[in-house]
Length: 470
Image (cartoon, rainbow, N blue to C red; front, top):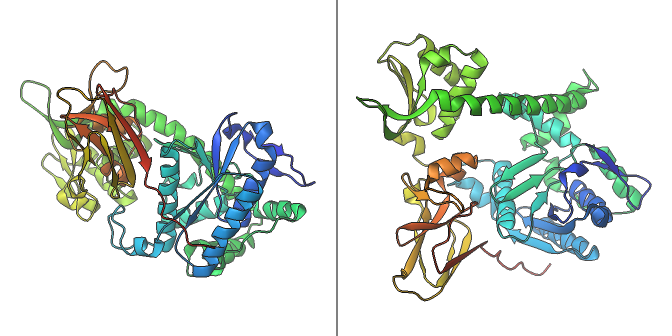
């Protein structure tokens, strides 16, 4: 539902108001640029009618020197003028881009690093319990640029869905209420209010892919089709709905075709870190479902095969002979047996990645508190003195075999299964923290567990370092 939001000016912005709920504590990601300033102003004008408790949040990326310092000061002042709580933090984006342990590669672009750090901080804010959701100011133009960029990279359907209106994380949701507004509408709205904004000088640098698409490629293509942005946004809407339908089908069929471990004589399967697909059932499905199930299975192993790799897996499953093997990128291996296609992730799949063993384990006194920089968390444990109470807990990464007892659950569950239910994948899955005490996991990020008697765990993001005076 797109509704026109009135404001104090004669011009209003189209906002997706159905994303909000009365009482929601909403932080607006405020960079100081036109889009985020417009979103903050529009929401501030209607916060009472929508029942929102509004906050502003600014991440200083450690780039552009004094210009970025001025962006922070501007954002802080704007929040103060609107009498909104203001959250701020700093990051060294350039250093992170040079060495990104979470992405498991030595280099990533500044754009990639900035986005990763920004969303990691948003998730910390959500995990702190101070806010319920974060709103980012992505616009109609951003959507068109994103779809085109992903098309150029050879994205699958999920990539062509572009910027989703809602992203769900275990800690909370990221909302994009401004996707129906064009950049021209945003600037007209701010001009009508007499509201200034900050211009990011890096937005003009053609060294960045996004800027080349915005300033060169899109205008060139619009010479062929002036309605290209609309068509790209419509493609995103179609792909988003198509992908949701297909994902439902994959979730329904995956348990019937994908199995863990190897079969054992006498029936059943031995536990293991490999997955197998029933090739007879797979061959009875259409190519679209075959591809999606193969990629779904590979994703459970932390791999993301591209189109040629997926087709190679499909050919091995449908036409291969027993004993044939296939080695793919990122350490993904496949083996054909008479009845199954078996997938494993070799050691090379995690080489250079953040492996669970490489993350430090932190001893936490009971009672006591501790900062855990590797996880970006501050842990505090309160305890009622009791016989048999352990002296220490351990904050560590989860590992295969871990089990947790969910609140109101009748039996322990595998952490691996819980993470799958939470849709935690990739690098986040490899670095998911748990707190163990007395041989029992008493806390796990993003899920409510049965508490250990007499022990209370409080977890918050590490506090940002103080900012220098503006």
